[in-house]
Length: 318
Ligand code: SF4
Ligand code: MG
Figure 1 (cartoon, helix red, strand yellow):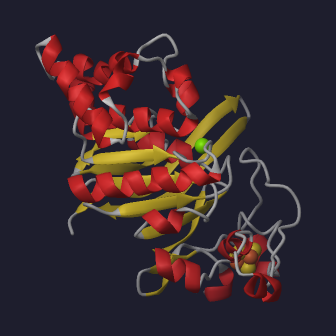
Figure 2: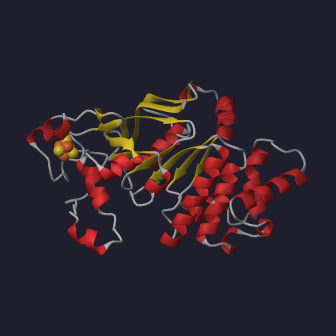
């Protein structure tokens, strides 16, 4: 499939004060093909959301580039960016915070269409909202209600309907299920999968752990403290992870089978996540890595293809 999004050596730093820089995203590269779901995983504060926002052009970049369909997002003029945002939409983590509590569902879902002047007549917009509600498993009767009248899962469906309103090609879902009950998470993931295969959408799916991402992702990138540390096909990542951080993340997922659970090696990470304002020298993971060696303090491991399509940044493999 054709590569639709290219993130090349992307860097996003925030100046906190005159002598403090927050290194939110540091030298991150990956590509996403048309129709693919790319999962981006890491603890909160690792820079995943910043990548999402920088890809959309909501944040300026510090260095590197983001190409969407060959176009440099950060070189676009305001009106070109506005047009591009029809094609690239975002679904947010917290449906409670991202939906205006004083707007009806009708108003919430139709807003992007009005902003982009998609349908001229009120009735046309209404019909389109009904259609979108049905696509996400809600009913047209819901159009006149307010966000507080819905459950968390239903609110996320409203957020998805709004994201679909402009018929996007590319969706960034920023922890769309993290705020939901476990029982509801699978339903929302299934809905996203259905919508994706029906419409041939491309997804960047951001998550803070590896428990649900496998269900939806073709490939997964693992981030730690602003750096991409491992990237490969989803099944390969789960079956033969290479980076010590990925291994620790995977060992934290509970396994329903008690026999397997008993035998399993659990890796408990020591210490706190360091601050992205003063990241460790060398390998960013070294202060918590059970395998850290002398070289890890002195030299930053490069992000390399260790096996075909399997990229790792770790001195154990270099
Ligand atoms: Fe651990 Fe060293 Fe590999 Fe970093 S480079 S993950 S500290 S072994
Ligand atoms: Mg986030």
